[in-house]
Length: 396
Image (cartoon, rainbow, N blue to C red):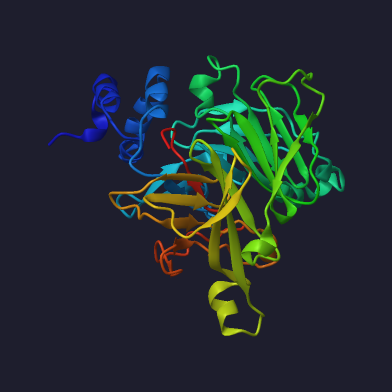
């Protein structure tokens, strides 16, 4: 009987080169260590894998809380296409706080002030400038494990940093850290600040058609910035321009406790508000759900042509993905449900003092009737450090 783990590297290289979908690469890597080594040993296969289309996005689950080294070096992935779990060795993400954009992870945690881009399948890493610019770190440098939780969002101006960065000088990495917004180019020695908003930062998105960066702050105030064509130096802050403020009273929204922003077609932005139910420690729901659970979402469109706001009650044939990832939408089908919001828990603070962690507020919200469906019956979404997050593949 043939031992599949002993296939020649040339044959494995040929097999890997014929894979057509991003998630098939996960299955290939999970067969055994020799298959994984063959797939990640050559740069041409790594580039091939990065450019593969995908049937669906996938969920990277929280890091293991066990003390077994083998488990801590692995991360599990939930594939929407099959409803199955796949475990991949990823020691580079061990004890790291992770955010995601376009299938890449922004990691920080083990070395103070360090930041890297990490591809979870090829394990390719790209160094980013150290994080000295973010003033939240200077309250107490000995409390790094706490202050790193201020990192909230990362977005890219191009889909694939490993492939496009050498060809596309417009590639930027933009992050929200607490009340600081900044960006860098690959190869920069420091981050550049972006200034000019009021209140708290909620979300940031890059509109690939308009070629503009859009930022949402307190009360749904939207700002924009031409982050590509600017005449400032790499160390001079950019300044946002106020674009519009969400007319909350008009739509019965007197406050925005949590909201998200993403590109919606060629001429609009989609703002999504999230309402949570909060529980007291003596409530029955507290032991089952934790301090809170998601109650509902509402969706509003901002036209970038005339600045008008409108409420929508359907996402059509699209599904939206929210959490510790850059917010994004993709076409549904073949297992991924249309007119739904797939969400993970992106609220750290209530769980910092709980010994077993938390973050089980994960599910699928149906816009049609407001019902919430569990994605899987598992405690693997519970986290102490890095939470579960969505991986958006390069074709989304």
